[in-house]
Image (cartoon, rainbow, N blue to C red; front, side):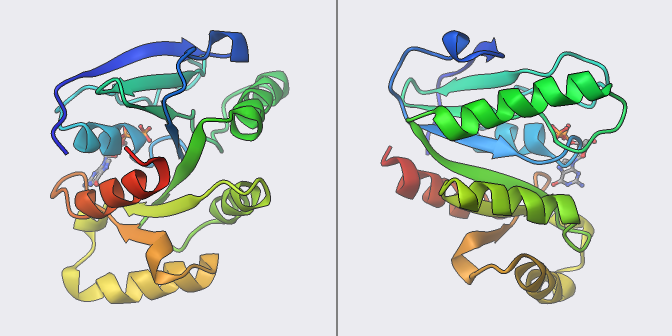
Length: 194
Ligand code: GDP
């Protein structure tokens, strides 16, 4: 996919702030620091477009990246970070649930997990949540450059088994080598028709 135009169109909290267009949307979910910004940058062929987050206490918003005026990537702020109050956490959960459950043009979600470790309880819960709301989901295991190639099959089996996945629901990815990029784009195109 040849990307010439990508633009952080809006950072939204409430539905009235979402873009008005009917372009398909793909959500990117995963705990903070898992590598969402890095994945976004690889998908849109930019070095440092989506800024690396990892700023605890910063206001959490849904970031709508307009790609080629055809599709939005929606960066969902990371779940599972500790240093926020209970009230902040509830506001954040409401923001995410509202978007994921009510947005008609949402065509699928990419759920990022850390490929170096066994998927966590939170990873499994997120997958169950997306399944419950019938949102087509691709699990992307990131940071795979940190795992020896000879161990990839073992990692793949562990992730598939722990999360209950078929082969076509999982992509092993590295932002460093860009391995997996084409598979992810193929999935995005299948879901959105762009
Ligand atoms: P986000 O908080 O989910 O947006 O995560 P970032 O994209 O900011 O990544 C968090 C940290 O992990 C940064 O230091 C990245 O450089 C690093 N990182 C992300 N993806 C990869 C990857 O595929 N390989 C390696 N080696 N590091 C990565």
